[in-house]
Length: 340
Image 1 (spheres, rainbow, N blue to C red):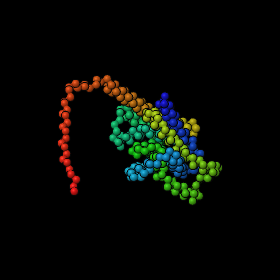
Image 2 (cartoon, rainbow, N blue to C red):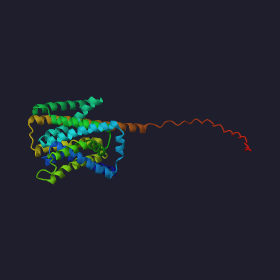
Image 3 (cartoon, rainbow, N blue to C red):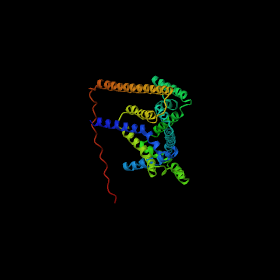
Image 4 (cartoon, rainbow, N blue to C red):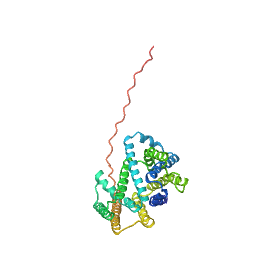
């Protein structure tokens, strides 16, 4: 019963995390007239504050010393910080410039880009269905490029930056809260310096706009918007199988795509529908292949366990044990007299 409750809680946490990531396009327009770079800087600063409070509550600080003594890991954290800054900044810009649908495409094709990077950078081998899925994804990009009249560069940059971020995070091997704290700490001083410069030149929008101080509160809330889904994702990751998380990850771009069409009323000409259909076909192939492979591995593991359980026990030897010679009495130690 406890296991089922844990899995149910993990599923709810996962739906909550990806659901919040899916509806986040509703939040960024509320921050106008702030520009994408200013919003990004606030997100970095306030995210570090929120994550710092969370780490203070759970008293998890030992990792800081370990990280400080590992230059290689520090370098990887810096790369992760740079790639996630590009990803976050471009996504905010895309949403606030009427490109929600193209932004959602970036997260649809991200699994395909991740697989391609695994082949090119890590020498991984693909199964035939995975090759078909990647080829279908490339065809989708070509169709969309023809439809847009240009390559879907927003989608591609979002997909490649997030795939690179995931690859680096895998090598760093840190918890979600810890890695976010380290990444935002790397960018904290540049972000804070940029915000102070905006304030000094009178270009800051922290208290500008019709909302006045309320606008500043919304900018500060970027830290909560960043940290809360991540905390929910971390809670889900330890409670549900990886295959379940893999399926849940499609919730975010599905919600974003639906918002782009139904709420932001972005255009979807036939060629764009065709490109998205190819992407969805590729993802369906990937999902089917992953589930089939997981089921096959479980069946193989069950067969191995059954074979091991059915194997006869090794024969027990009945030969008499060799006689152990009786110990001989030790020689008497010579008597020593005390010196005079």
